[in-house]
Length: 247
Image (cartoon, rainbow, N blue to C red; front, side):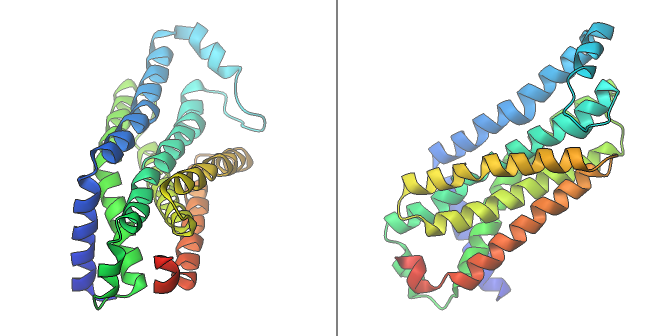
């Protein structure tokens, strides 16, 4: 891939996504409740609930999760689940808009006339969605992790693990959404397809967190999500041609 061409395409895609206010608002509001509101509420309950709150959390772990301390339960299970869910939802709508809206506007024909490849176009869309997603999602995650450190719920070692699993979820969602959106013929179908993979991804997340013991479970989960992202990108680059892209 040519760096200069890729840079121009990324700039074009980023501006195009940013001009869609509805996509930006939707991508910002729902993840806010998942990535900020719910974690802050849980931490407040844990900090203010005293021993009674600890016992309630202690009695509600998933089967096979050997975590006795409620703080560890939040850091090793609840926070990763919320970060994965937020990371999956945040880029999906923007990915759909980046592909389907362009197809419906008939502006893809312009790209065909330019000296660019399908790989460069898809890579630019991936990078643009990731860039916008990080601008929205990273501040959300930073707020929650900072509060967790201040309250003593999470230690410094937990921060890179939680950040890694969030970034992996974003990469996984972006790649799979791109692939599913390329298979869709219209905006509604694309939204339905991209929404379907969230449930299997969450089930895989729960299975990974419960199957792997210790603090390293979040890194294992991140590797699983990155593997799915790599597979989706590989399939998209191998299968999509200009002819299929324009159908």
